[in-house]
Amino acid sequence: MSEYTPPIATVDAALFTLIDGRLCVVLVRREAEPYKGQLALPGGYVHVDEDEDTEGTARRVLLSKTGIVAPYLEQLFTFSGKVRDPRGWSVSIAYYALVPEGRLHEAKAAVEVLPVDRLPALPFDHSRIVAKALQRLRGKASYSSLPAFLLSETFTLAELHEVYERVMGTKLDKQSFRRKIEDQSIIEPVVGAMRTGPHRPAQLYRLAAAALTEFDRTI
Amino acid sequence: MSEYTPPIATVDAALFTLIDGRLCVVLVRREAEPYKGQLALPGGYVHVDEDEDTEGTARRVLLSKTGIVAPYLEQLFTFSGKVRDPRGWSVSIAYYALVPEGRLHEAKAAVEVLPVDRLPALPFDHSRIVAKALQRLRGKASYSSLPAFLLSETFTLAELHEVYERVMGTKLDKQSFRRKIEDQSIIEPVVGAMRTGPHRPAQLYRLAAAALTEFDRTI
DNA sequence: GGAATAGTGTCTCTCAGACACTATGAC
DNA sequence: GTCATAGTGTCTGAGAGACACTATTCC
Image (cartoon, rainbow over all chains, first blue to last red; front, side):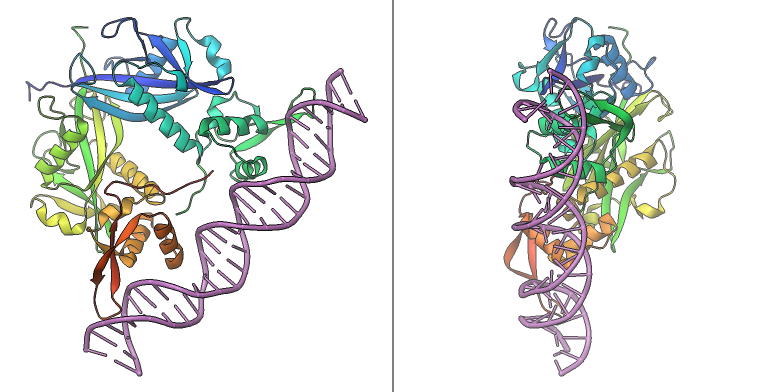
């Protein structure tokens, strides 16, 4: 097998955030060919001498191209084939990530954050990657704590409620939502911490577990 | 980037079947180093001159190593890193597949079909791949038509009921199961076709869609 | 007091689970 | 008729959705 030719191996990452209640993707302008100068998902080669695994590649690429360390990062899908990259037969291990709006100040100046429903056509198959990531995000929102990673560490129930509605694109009944979230032990109150304003103060909560938590399901 | 060294790129596939109500995996004995002679998941290099994409690799590898064309094949996860393969930093795009017991006669003589709860330790990270595939299979069983791909093209409701129970490892109420399946339009009766025996004949059904169908869910 | 948002009480309707019942074949 | 499995009727309890209510702050 000495003449074995492996495909090109890259990682691409779709980094989502929520700005003014709109789901957005973080894009970077490509500094090298192909598609130099175009907006695309942050991505790069797998570095076998540097990366622990492809999740390490994703973290490195996100940090180096956007300046952001995302609190949630998950492998999405591996895209592959002869035509998706003009450089030749390639494999792209795609990841998606969530970051709260408040952490975007860490971002490099060169990034552009665009609403998912206002994206231009993206190079490679990046539009497909974004579509698949959105599908995963929306699906997983309905049975897990995933949308909470779009909020800062503490948040009110109303904020959590809204982020679920925004991600899923549907109205959710207030009482049903609160029952569901509290029954599942997804979150815990931060005792004594309240969000104040010109109204009754709201209890602040944090995620009970640092990792993603899934709800119960039945057939 | 002329000095760029890509990782090794392989595909591994966990092929499941149901024998006497027990979930089993199809293993092959490795013909080459490393781990020559050991039982492992069917796998092989991505051939950039031959494969359309990595799903094509998976189909080719499954056919060439086991002789089987599986009616259901889905990408599972991409495993990667320096230590999982003694040949060096590698990426394995793992797939899982389902095949009905009745199609195993196509299989090559060299394959071994072992129950998932009786597997030996497998080389590389193949035990992790099987574990992750089982997790996906069990999870997806609860909200999709997935387990039906372990049955031949036509089947009775009782057979479908049993395969769901076997895959999920739980008892399901007969009436609830039938309501659920029929409400979701997962299957359609094959008019006039009945499974006979020393008892009342049973209506035969087929999947209403050739592809996987998901049930409705709510938050 | 009024405005604004937080948080609760409670009714209803749907649906899953439980389980007993009827149906229809072979013998 | 018996046996075996197919298939249905129906009760009940839990929970989601709807929606109105009370609570607590700032002004």
